[in-house]
Length: 273
Image 1 (cartoon, rainbow, N blue to C red):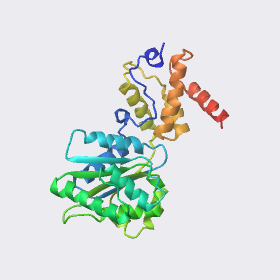
Image 2: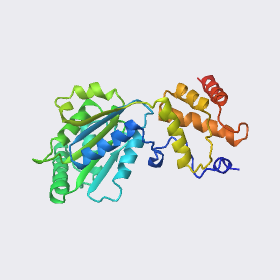
Image 3: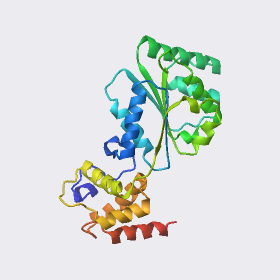
C-alpha cells in the first residue's frame, strides 16, 4: 500500500518543494505576499524580502506568481540561482531571459537593448515587467550594480522594471555598500520563523491540502510542541520532521504522531550528525 493511500491522502503533504498550493499564509507570509503584490501593481520598483534558510521565501515567490495567474499585462521573469562570472555574463543572461535578440558583444549593447525592451513593453505596450531573483544572497557587488542600473530606467510616474529580491539576511550589508541602492528599495520585509501556534496550524493546513479528512488531528498537542521545539518554527524543518513521522504511521507502528515518536525521530537525526 502506498504512503498516500495508507494515510488516506491525495497528495504528499510535507514535500519541501515550493508548491504554492501548500503555501501556509501565516500572518507574516500573508503580509509579505500582499505588500509585494501592491508594490508590483503600483510599479514601485525594488522589493527586498529577507529571511533565514527554510523560512519559506521560495514558496512565497511561487505564491506571488500564482496571484497574477492569467493577467496578461504582467510579464514575469525568474532567476533561481544568480551566479555569474562577470557583469557582462549577467547582462547577457538577462537579455536572453527577456527574449531580446540578437546576441550582443558588449555590455553597453546589452544595456541599451534592455532599456529599449523595457520602454517598448512598459510604455508602448503598457505591460508591467517583473524580475524575481531567488537566492539573492549570491549576488555580488558587480551584480548589484547591474540591478541598480536597471532601476534607473523609469518614466516620470514609475519604474519600468519591477524587481523582487528574496535573500538570506547576509545580503543586507552588501547592499548597503552599493551607492544609492538602499534608497531604491520601496519595500523591505523580514520573514521570521513561525511561533508554536502557527507551527500547529501549518501542519494541519498541509494535511488538509493533501486531502486528509479525518475528524481528529494526526498529531497530538504534545507532538506539535516537540516539533516546534526542535524546528524553532522553520517551515522546511517542520516539513522534514513531519514527513518522517508520517512514514511511521504508514508502516503501522503508531496510530497517531505522539511526542514520543517525535523524540525518536529527533534522536535518529542526531545520530547522523
